[in-house]
Each structure stands twice: as structure tokens, then as C-alpha cells.
Image (cartoon, rainbow, N blue to C red):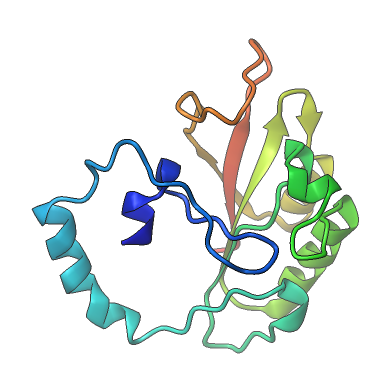
Length: 164
């Protein structure tokens, strides 16, 4: 429900862990069909364990499926330089995450950016190619995002990497 009423349908938290998302202008996403979908999906949520943790603090089991959406170090986002919750994100963090996934031996999906403006995530590309992982291009253009700067001929290429 929070996403339906938050700005750009995103939930944001400040450094103290308190939700501070602005009230969204276009709240047309919540309707009777959406309500019905949520009601029918709710029992499925009881069957899964969702965790929001730093990847270093999570141990994987053979029954897990892992979805990760780490900070995109090549995006220029403020959490990369100033940090969020006392932590910043770097290329080394990407490498550490890639190594943990390589050794997890469970199915995973990882969202990231291959390219943002003129910054290419070469470590991500090398990791995908070295391990024969599948790279699925996500067809997002971010044209509706007011917080991004669009530079002609310098696209953002978002991907989902899977090992299955």
C-alpha cells in the first residue's frame, strides 16, 4: 500500500530508518483490481521469508532464491559518495557481492546497471561473461524520473543477471 501512495511509487527511508517518502501526485495505481490482486497475493507472502540485510550478513541455504538490488556504483547516486546508514558502495563491494554469489550455489537474480551516461560497469560485464550468467536487458528509459539527468546518446542500460 505504501508504494501506491508514495512519490514515483518508491519507498524511501532516512538514515534513522524512518520512512520519508513524499506523497505521490498520481495515485491512480490503486484501484479495485489492484486491491483484489493484493488480497489474493497476501497468503503467498506468508510462505516466504523476505530479508533486507547487507549481503555480508546473510547466509544462503540450498532452498533459497536470492534477489539482489544493490546500489549501482556507476549511477552517481548520493549513497555511493555520501553513504546511507553509514555505508557507501564501491567497485570493491560489487566484487565482494559477486564472489559471494559465485559461492552460494543457489539461484539468484541481480539488478544493476551496465551503463549509466558515460560510465560502464566493466566489473559486472566481466563477471557475467566469466561465469556464463544470463543478462536480461530491462527496457527502462527513465524518462519519467524527475531526479535523473538525461544526456542524449548516453543511455542508461539496466539489466537483470541470472544464473538459471
